[in-house]
Figure (tube, rainbow, N blue to C red):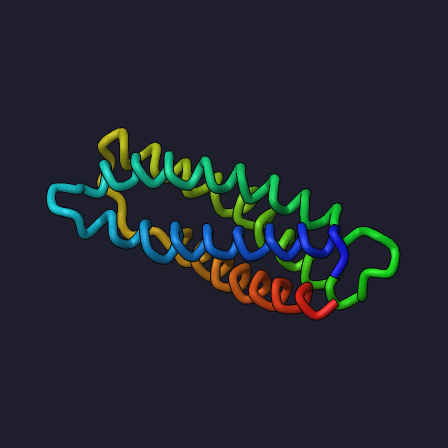
Length: 141
């Protein structure tokens, strides 16, 4: 393993841990805390997800740059592209509609449950699987 793939591996596993901790531990648990209403939970969630999404974008750039070196296996490049596409779909397609919806809820509208969250979670699960495969793959090259 050279220094470039070591950096990509480390960043991939840190990224994976961050996604697992925030999306699959913090996010669902905050709504179970005593006194946390839907508007409060949405307000917290917007803040909590804004920062990690920015970090994820930086991680994506680092991993893409690290695997863009000549000689990287095509399947590693494919997994890297998949992770980037899942993140881009979350940030460009799903998050804007979730933000608009949460703006309405925070303004006092009573809205039914959102399907947008299901899309976000589905993309998050795909991203986790791709990050895990990518991290393990990077350990083997």
